[in-house]
Image (cartoon, rainbow, N blue to C red; front, side, top):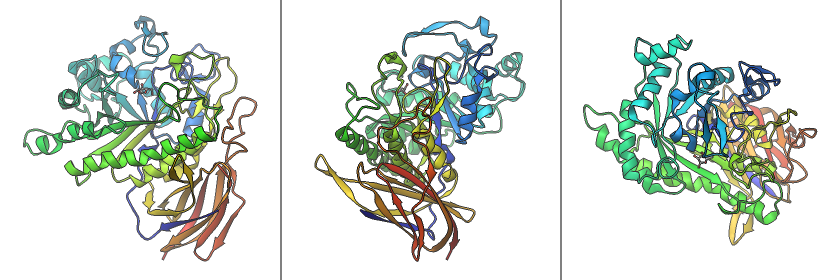
Length: 506
Ligand code: AHR
């Protein structure tokens, strides 16, 4: 099989925000506790209670931002429970996720410490479902207040003089569901109210994100977007948010029978690929609504939860959402990023759910102290990090497809970007059985010094585990040659590759 991938090097597109490679860590299962926070007395090597191996691995990804504390947990979280001396913090049961004891050891200061260690921006999701406007406004002041104020002084009394820079704030989460079961109109009013009272306490302006739709519910997005011409035109009123979110999970089965992360056949595999490709339609539909009210694209679309969701691993707490991560998950991630790059003019942020030990994780830690494992998804993030803040290049694929349940499913996906005289191309072959030869045609530029890496394995169900941590990890791409039009490469079945090259624009 062959595919022609055409890249227009002389028609630069919008910048691919690094925030499209954002992350998400919720107080859920072993995501925070054990996954990131082990406490200062732990035998696990840590910095002030934050585990070192995780920090070091995540730094390899240059993670741009981290969303916290939820998720559904955010609309139950009262931030004052998580400040001050740890022994004085209240303990409660996390009834939402697994019924574990939440002792609030990981709170605001610990989260900001983690962000600083990672070099990532904080994205704090406020509590709209069960909190008050005053509570959220106080949290913003506590974190960002530069001058004298009760909240800034409270922060100082807990050992932090300087305000933090926290740009990103979520105005609740999934308020159509776990965040309050609200109607769109009721939530839109609350978002206006909460957003109005979230004011930065220092010179960094806030980027407030209104909690968005469940999947394809464009009516929800429309209800939120109507505020733009309405309020924006009033001389004394500013639109109370800068972005609108949406969530989209790739479910290979159904919500009640999602299927195993590792034991799947061709049918489940292809259903997953089709579901992952569905993110394109989803973003297109929401973007079309946003375009009506905001043709100049001043407001952003924020996909602040995405990724695969399988049945939990046998024997684990169903409320912990712990799942394995195979090469199939890597295919899903790679397909998403190509779509994100195409929507770079509207999509300002995306956050994979979730970073460690929960859903489509980058890292899986061992509760019994064994070595941590980088998942296949981790490697897609790492191989693609050259796209962060690079200029997108229009990319067109003419390639093979497979008939799946009566529809044509394209099996090759690609995207490209450029920065400082170099070009990065990402290419995925989702075909389960067939390799594909890719003719990379670069229009308006001449490429040289090309090198490539490929992520693949003998089976799409392959995964990494302690003792076999590199079953799925990138290796050099052998079949890469220059052609008069650009480059030629061959990709094995179910594989993802990146090609870096020097480019001279014509
Ligand atoms: O990521 C797990 C959960 O999925 C989040 O808490 C919620 O927002 C979504 O439904």
